[in-house]
Image (cartoon, rainbow, N blue to C red; front, side):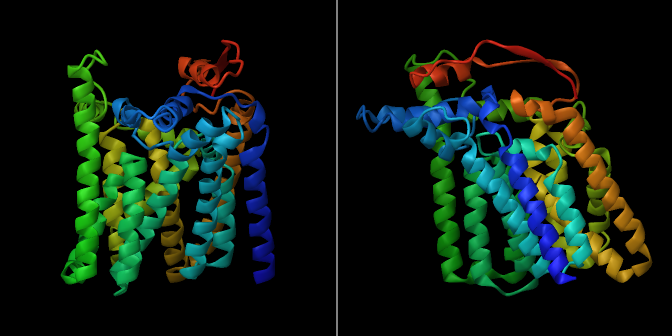
Length: 402
């Protein structure tokens, strides 16, 4: 049985690799990829031009400063190669797959549940997000790892794991601000374990606070100076942009993020993770998973301007759903068959969504949408090609249906 499970997981991982790379060289860049990569590309210009002012570029615009640090660096040295620039995101996507299996085996999750759940995770349209250059896949990996370390830290007196938790949280936060919702869970663990009294932990926390303070101060001050000196005409740049987004983002349509998750997975998958999220509240051993989950759901429901950012939490929601499902079927064996049938249906629904609604996007754009619209190649894509002396693509627009 164990050999069969390992064989199925290897086949599932192979399928995941195929879906990550299939026709990737024909998939054109979009603005969400090109814009943050261009900022890192310009930052690297500070070296050959010997002008430190270029270091300010990532802090001056709308994207998180280092959202595309890896892809932007590759862009600077190798140009707009469609496969190479997406390779960091794909690697983090595949690492997330491996991390999930490691977590489930470490937690002794039922073997058939691991297999079916990982198949369901490997084939939804979520896979397309990993094929996009940027920080989404990286942030998703560090969000998942940090959330698991929070849960482990709540059950064990493992200072080393909680130190690693702080480091992974910081890396995730510097990549995507969505990671901020992990902070209450981290604070709760440290309060429970009284680890703040440990000198090494205290010094690490102090260093991280100084780093984050310095990081956000630059993000705030540089756009203001650029505006005052006349280098840019708008104050709505850098951290000011995110402050305004929060002000405008209190949701007038709280279900828009949930709809986005359905678009990236399926209705059945979304209902499964929402149902298990509610059950976590009732099960004492999952209280620290729930602390993470409740703040993630609050961000999803209340701040809907970046509705697609729910995918940053998708791997965490999935891991939570699988862990809690395993707890339920072990406590109530009679529910094994219904849950097995549910997961088979989820696999089918995720696959149907991918291969009917999004498979054609592999040849054009990874932009996921809720309703039919016109998707055009963005100006930042043309800039990316021209800056590297490459022939830009034609200005093609396609009607994309869900």
